[in-house]
Image (cartoon, rainbow, N blue to C red; front, side):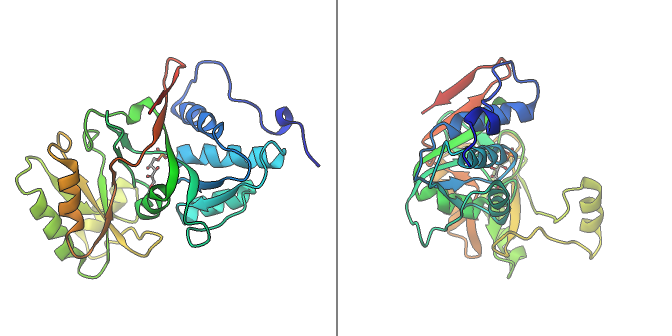
Length: 266
Ligand code: 5RP
């Protein structure tokens, strides 16, 4: 039976958001206002996208939305959507996605992104590049003056075969960049465990949904220069599958700010 909207899917709170997770929720709920019945919806990965998936599930359950099908950008997103009650499809059945909603690790002033801290950059990029509209949802901590400036990783998905050679070739691309560093991502996110593992023979790499590895690139002062040329240089390396720079893909970015404002940048 249909429940009244208010009972199953309370609207976002109007008060000033008190935590980073609350900001993520505010941005996500704002993006979900763009979802219409019958849409093919790209479902993002991560703690911000989780709020969007849950909200769509709530709206489907109470009948405010109908006939939405989701294209998940990861195994995680598929599981989250299944729990939320969103019927799933894929890019083979739906090569054109109406709207994708996803988080990001960094957003620059031109709305270029870094994504893939969760390791799902390949499927995310495939789904989001196939979308008529890609809406990015972030709290304001994700805004950077240039990509790589947060000193978080710029991830590159590589095939496991010959990964050390691929890593060396990636190093060569950035040889002239002061303070540049890169490393194979470890399975454990626990800093102590991964530092220990790297010293011994026990290193266990992070494995993506596509059974690949991730090489994380670190920049002291962000990436200077022509991003599309740098993108080409990375993609030209045999053994690289994809990188986490999303250049010119975002249609709009919804930014939830600590002062309570929600800003939409197109
Ligand atoms: C996963 C991603 C995420 O969208 C990105 O890491 C942001 O995550 P969160 O919303 O948890 O901050 O690209 O591969």
